[in-house]
Amino acid sequence: MIFKILKLFIGFIFAIALSLVLLELFIQKAEIETFSTTDFDSHIGRIKRTNMNFTLFNEGFSMGQYNNNSILGPDCSIEKKTGVFRIAILGDSYVESFQVFRRDQFISIMEKQLSKNFDESVEVLNFGRSGFDLADMFAYQQNFVNQFKPDLILYFLSSNDLICKQTDLLVPKVIFRDNELIVTNDLFPQKYLQTYNKTKLLTQNSITMQMLNSARKLILAGKFWPKMLGKFYVNFKEPPISNNITKQLPPLAFAIQDNFSSNTIVVNRGNNQLSKEFMFGLEKNKIPFVSLRDTLTVLKQKGIDPYYWVVTNTKGHWNHMGHKAIGYYLSEKLSKLLIN
Image (tube, rainbow, N blue to C red; front, side, top):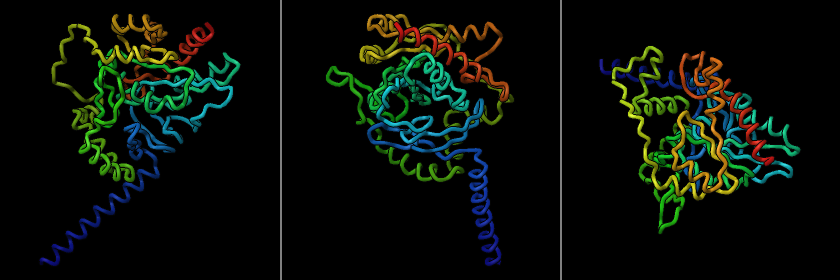
């Protein structure tokens, strides 16, 4: 009797293991999900894995790759080629643009249009990272982006990005030290880093484990059921009452602003205006400013919602029409700024 129970138990464990292996192989071959795209670098912090293809389903659908330098898009050299005008774009998930193929991203549209407008070839590098705020972008620029020696740097910011929460524990922090603004790697929590390094061995080599880890993060963030049920999800919690009071910006936001390089342009990618104090600082430091609210408002007036995705019946990041409008709009604005 004991032998029979033991035999059934071993058979059950074997069947589960075999099912997981077959599931893993099926997902890999079908390319319906991706291994973990992140890694850790002691200088840059959390970074994307080099030469890695990805497939993502969200509001939309995209397939792409991180190149030889951990940047979204085709391979590029750190050293800029002769006759190339290089633009680096910093921002959050709106810049990262995981919802559309690269050929449809505003970045590709800008690259093509600007190359037509100037005699030299224009190269636009996508340094967008989901969840980044102003401080994260500034640290990323200092530790990583600057080595590409861009001729122009665009910061895509929303009003919330100026709060500088710096929530990612594995991204270098921007702090004041001895009355000086510095980027430091001294604040990485070692216990968290050790856990991450152990976990990544699984998520970088098993799509099944990566999916389970993503589900775990959704649960912790309270987004699991909204993601699972989609339009059938009902939120019984009362929405917070908005009193339209502008959040006071931390001194860090203004310090970073004062340390922008001279080739910086700030782009308001959000629906709300940036604070008057921050705008005053841009004017004081002679930092050019462009707002996407203008062109996105024109789209809405034409009955086109740049945030609505028909295929998933959801609102989220810029859709194809949004990217197209932004790409042409920025090309025109930058052409005028560069000519002047």
